[in-house]
Image (cartoon, rainbow over all chains, first blue to last red; front, side, top):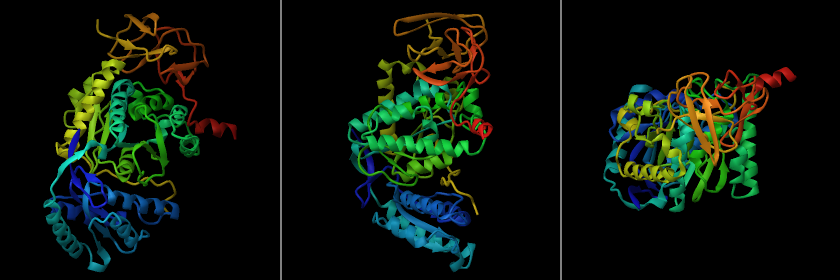
Length: 386
Length: 100
């Protein structure tokens, strides 16, 4: 099977063809947002990081911005810097340029403030947009796809049907030679022993247990029961009682294939197969981790109705909750019958999701793209803001 | 007959409702040859769990064939199983604070 993709100089294929407008720091977000409003064919990724943080967090932000800029769905990138932030604009620009895609940059303080920065940024973005618009997409083998997978606003229908159905779609992609990334380390708690058994090597198994232990210790350090935060109030209303129950349902979306390796937040796994990227469960940070990991498409299961998309990665919303599907048409893309949890129908549900993913890859829009529900993004950091 | 609830693993001591279920109805269930008929003591909403058997205070609650928490009181068959009678064993910063 195949999809229509845009070839990139680094050998990857985009399923969208945007000029990415990326601020290096929270204080440059407004100008980045204005530029993206001025230039058709551009999208902004907004976040709250990049300054007054400790070095480990600044390193994560730098790596994440580079990985985001290198995502195949971006044809070129305009970086927007304030000028006095801790993040190095040149380091981010050089990192993205290693993928050989065009990278431009502006510095608000050097250009004389918001108005001239908006004018210059829009001029550069328009030049990039003209070149991008001339690119043609062509048929590409589906082994070039990388899915990101995520569940959000889960209820028990997620674990019963929509997550295992996504798992079947993931198995299908990996059998065809493609790759997939998943994270949400918090939602491995109570199910990590099952994932560790699927590790490609004892070392990878040890890494899985290590990132789960690290995440759980961060929650325990707050001195309270994490229930209410994870599982959330909405998860509990939907019938999920403990993090263990939520996790056992959540990992079903990862299918059944061996886990090849574990990566840190902001990193992009190399090679084919199934990978874990350490990340929290919350959407603004978790979706960013998947986009940074090079996913061109995100399969997202929801029970109660999570609306979030991502600026330059189509996010396909899949639910097995019939009430949610009927009641939230603005946000849902696909319905999986709850009875598909039975193994004989699960494969068929996985096939349906896979075919929809190929259609979306080839240009069909997701509801999150049509509604434009994608600006609440961020980068996961663990240290204090100082 | 429409399915009212599912058992995901033969080891499980809870089932999950796949529709809103009323109090007093009898639900027939099975998993890998094991059959249950459970009369619901309370209404159980879609997605929520009920007990398949007597569960002692402190015992494991099992779903997907795995431990999902522990009972904080005795639970009888057909009772709603949720945060009012189950605690998690993980991410319990409250317990580590009591220990120190």
